[in-house]
Length: 152
Image 1 (cartoon, one colour):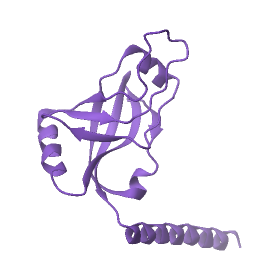
Image 2 (cartoon, helix red, strand yellow):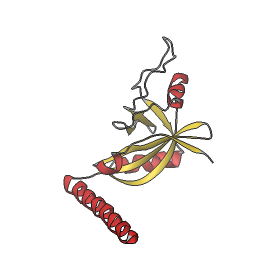
Image 3 (cartoon, helix red, strand yellow):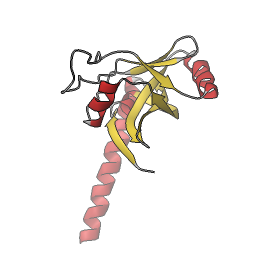
Image 4 (cartoon, helix red, strand yellow):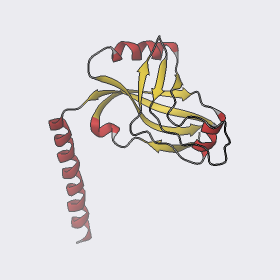
């Protein structure tokens, strides 16, 4: 099964502690698909929201298709996410808690269709971010030290 990544939300795991992840399909128009085939997508400010037992993807920027005409899509339009009913019920239950959000992690092609990996994100405090950064820096430093020992 070939998966080609379109875009990743690199800040998501820094700003949120990600719990469960889900694979969702996305309802798109023709020019949006063509623009995604060109690899153009910005996930950084996007998020998911529940509305009447449906989940929508807001604030994702898919730019206009370069060779489109007057019927080009709105770059920031709301897009519906396609999930199984049990997954939607589970997401509705978890997002009722305070400080929980539906965060898109990455968008990719799978069997010719656009898929979006979404995660249940719990907001991090500043001290959590600092601790994660400290751990990340220490692991990088350990790798450098071990690499230096092997060369000698």
